[in-house]
Length: 136
Image (cartoon, rainbow, N blue to C red):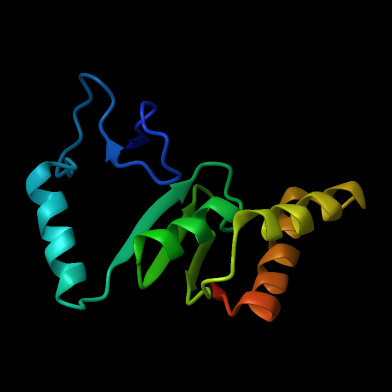
């Protein structure tokens, strides 16, 4: 299992191994890998990020912001229960506060975290061009 690097201030910090972890076939986020990613981005190649949500919730405000800021073509979010979501295509006017306001309002109205996230994704689709779907 990989963990977000706690030292980073970025929403999507590089995924790194915990100290002394043995992860067969694991990927270290090295300077060489960073250079390859930058080269791919410069060459116009599509970049896809895949990460997990241990609590199995749909993509968050930060996931959408990361998609926009880092120039990923798609983001795949996989929950530990097997829920899998794909997001892409948010426009430049999106900021996390829009999602967060919708999400928090839904929570106050009694919706679950999961349903609040789905409602927020639908609103971001309508208002900011986000494309999303749950893989079934």
